[in-house]
Image (cartoon, rainbow, N blue to C red; front, side, top):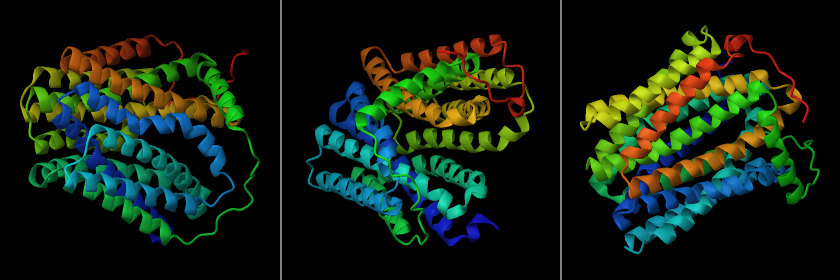
Length: 411
């Protein structure tokens, strides 16, 4: 059965589309707001990081806490708080009282509620679509993400330049409300047999720290972990730097900045569509090729000052990088034994969060201290280093589909 004939899945999909779409509006608006208020790239990075602090600190204990509880109620509560928080930020904008402290506090709350929502939402998906349809469901959710990345930034830029900050943030608040309504009208029976075993926060964190050792448990895992860090660092650093660079150095208008970020969304869509056609190549060769294409995209951005070439650069950068994420994630699951998947996943979540925060702080700090071109050049160099490491990786000669689980070394 087509999943779009499943009423509950359609409700969840549209709710997810709305939420991601709204987030794309905020992603472009909030750094620009801080730049307008302070003129500081470093402060823009600090404010953006506030939305990432709560997930890094709370992700593992939240995952344990959500087990055995009503996922629907948790998701509803999270979206209600998110809507209220964003509405309050809009209210401060209308009063002309918004400052970076209010914005930072609001983003911290949104980061926390977003974490609760993602955990609860993900846990509901199997109950809605069935375990045999999970791949299809997540493919459709990825499609919603790609579409939002394509259309969201350019619309955000147009709305921001035409109607101002309040209008952009109002759109984001409204999408939280749409998502809330979608979850409210879900009708499915939650599994009440899930274990509700309690575990202290301290033990949860100790377990998560131990999970990190499995990320370097053998040559395959070490290679994948290194590139996991490079991909996440580069993505976050380049996204923020592009906003700073096009705004402060090139003096692009809001709609032009939106066009640049939407070009990345087009690359994302094309990359996902091309992935199946390229999976026949050796794992390391495929990865190395994608890193080269992505670095070429950054080179175009550094050399150009006109909108079309910079859009082309973002198209190449993000398209190749999105494919590299697929390669890396597929390889991780392929070489990890079943009984280690949860631990590897836990370590990966924390690693992604820490690296994302580092990427944003690096971007804002270096852009302000020297120039926005420097973090872009560093990320290009990092991608070239990843290319060399990939080519020299002796165990990367298999196709992705031929990778098998590899046991871990003794610690």
